[in-house]
Length: 328
Image (cartoon, rainbow, N blue to C red; front, top):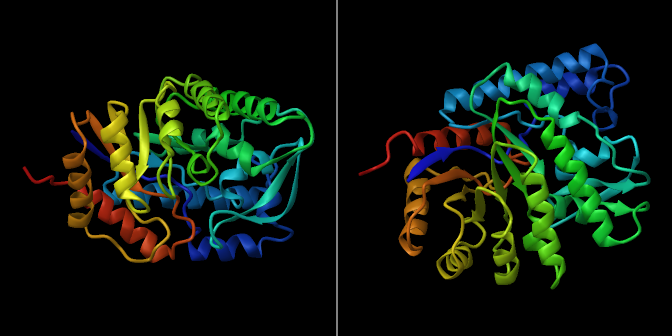
C-alpha cells in the first residue's frame, strides 16, 4: 500500500501575514474576490501561498495544497465570494470552533473561476498539486437558498456550479479533495442520500485528477456510506480521530474504493502526533479491514485553520516523517 502524505487544506494565516493584511488600508479580507483585490493585497496572498508551499515541501508532503488563505468563511467560501450571493451573519456548525458567514443565494450560480485562479498561481510553485473544494452536499447544507426553490434543485445547482469550477482547474492538479463533513454531521434522509451521491459524482466527473470524497467529525451512516461508494470517486476519506471504530466497521462490512484517505492527525487539537502514532493508526485500520488498498492518503481529519501556526507546522512535519520510512 502506497502511503501519501497530504492535508485537507484550510491553513491558518501566519502571524506576520495576518498583521500585514489587516494593516492594508481599506482591506476587509472576507469581502474581496480574486481579481478585485488591490495589488498590495494580492501580493500579500501570493507571499502566503509561497510560504505554505515551502512549508509543505520541506515537511516532505507528497501532495501540496494551495492553503486557502483567502477562505475566511471556510467551506462556504466559493459561495460567499460569488456575485449572486449575499453574505449574512455568522453561523456556527458542528462545535463552537467552526464558523462562517451565511451565504444567501439570490441568483443563478454562474461560473466564477475563483478557485481555479488560486490553483493556477500555486501550479507555478510545486509539482504534486492538490486542490481542495467543499462537497456539493455540504456546501448546499451550509447555504440559504432564495433562488432555486427546493432542496433537490438547489443541491443540483450547487453541484453543477462546483463541477464548472473544478473543470477549470489547471492540468497540474493531480488530486482533488472534496470535503463532505455534513454527510456525517447532518446526514441526508432516504432518497436524499442517493441525490447527494449523484451530486458528488457530478463534481468528480468534471476532472481527470484523482478525487477523494473526504468525510470527518465522525462516521457515515451505513446507508449514506453505501450510496457514497456509488459515486465515481477514487477514494473515500475516513476520520480515525473522531470515530475510528465505526469507520473501520463501515469499510470491513461494506467495502470501499481501492484507495482510501485516513484522517490520522487531529486538525483541531494542539497535541502533535508523533510519526510513530500516525503509522500505528494506519496499521490499526489496515489490520481491521479485508483486502488491503492500493494507496492511502494520510491526512489531518479536518482543515487546520484553527491551530496555532507553530502546531500546524509541527503536524505537517509529523505527517511527512510518517511516510519517509515505513517499517517492513
